[in-house]
Length: 298
Image: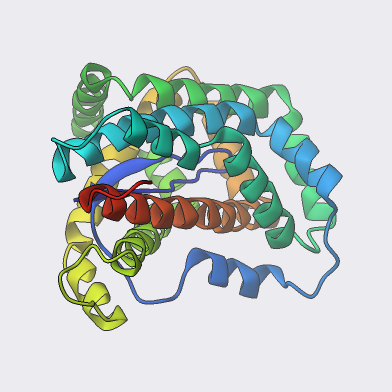
């Protein structure tokens, strides 16, 4: 069984289908609230909307929707191959509605960036620059390209060859992952989303016997190593493919911004916002899967 989760670089979230897993309750959202300080004044919806426009979130949400529709077909094949059809497709399309995802994302990002102050000025300046826009465009293009399994396989082989050679680019990509805490944050996001999926199924009566929260946690926690491995196996080929056109100096500039207070603040806020979006999506998918398995109208 699989469930989607969120990956965030400074400008991007990636939905992946990974094995069911879960961690303790320390979510990315909770961690961001502690570090960002929720008592500070909000930055305002208009400015957040302008920022997410700069971050090309319309393009990101369009890719997320396409990934979601594809993932819906995977769920149907795995869980009810004889019951899939137009009704299921319509439900999945509604769950992955781009406008709804964008609205939830913007609202959560506004809360997470409360009190950002001068840091927000730096965020807007970097991602509004030629380099910032180039990075965002490359991330979106690579993410869409990797929906093709042949492209994904080729990217993995290319990364293995690059890693075997070693050198400055491998070191830079490794530092980028470490600076943005991409492995741990993505594993955490995956586990939060997978628990929400389980909750949706459980609350809709998918299981013969009621499952407690502790049982769900225990069941999904066991697959954490698989989630971590798949996260790593996907992440580095993605980054290598996306940033291949960047010069060494451009990639170093991106890493340098990531290491600033502004860069870290945005990264935490993005993970918190994506956690809100993917947790709700996963919960809704769990309920929809349960209803479909039981032959109910969904």
